[in-house]
Length: 333
Image 1: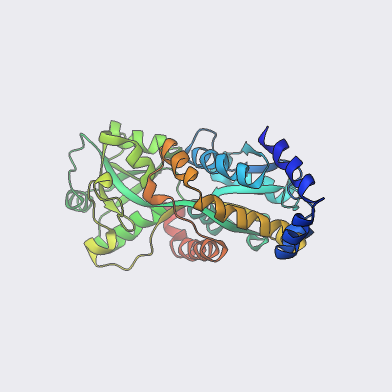
Image 2: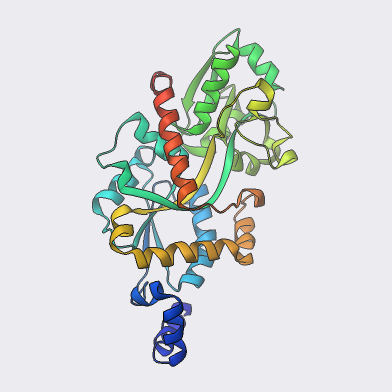
């Protein structure tokens, strides 16, 4: 097994003069005392088989080879992700052997809607696997063919709009569109990405908003009309314009960002372990095997973008600010 080979190699190297020289060159690695010496548990606050699960498995299929250990996921999709976070912060030991893999945008918006039992500053996101902008789309057979059709119809009646969960960056993008144009929208949570796509395709709702990766995966059954961010994939999203370009707005990108998180206490108490995690995480992003695994998992290549602590925490803060701004509308939708 690869992990056994890796550990045996480490024991051998530590008995040689070459390993001593390497330890002086990388003192953090030596002080970490062979970390990791066992598998790493990861709580995922969404359902097994979903987009986060696919991204997690693609990324860790390479990371485990670089880090020399296995990753063992547990899935807790309850209460829009709150259950997973509460378990992680309340039950998982902060020792760098327990990680979180979440979606920064919608999950942080949860805390803006209702404060958790823990201090949100007691965990950090340290590594972004990928990110994609949210978008607005219709079913292929919808009578609403353009974004202009939607705005015009939304000024006549309140349109029903599917969303994977109420507190979601895509929901905020839609509310901002309504504020800007005067169109009326009624957000309806449809239990995850699959349900949100199905709602638009079957006509259960007039249209839907969702992360664009899931919309691209739906293929010709849907058509994208507007992107709540930069459309960096062009035709894959039907060359849909960004909300800022179409309406002269200055809205931050509404993103779905999958990222690994960790207890702040683990960072403080085990800095050497954390250094290994962050270093090997970045090495994984630079490994060509990752792109192969990501594409095999139906990921959009342009969305596989590395980001570290600073960028992830900036997005976390931005989502808290946007959540506070739109809390009344999201709560009353």
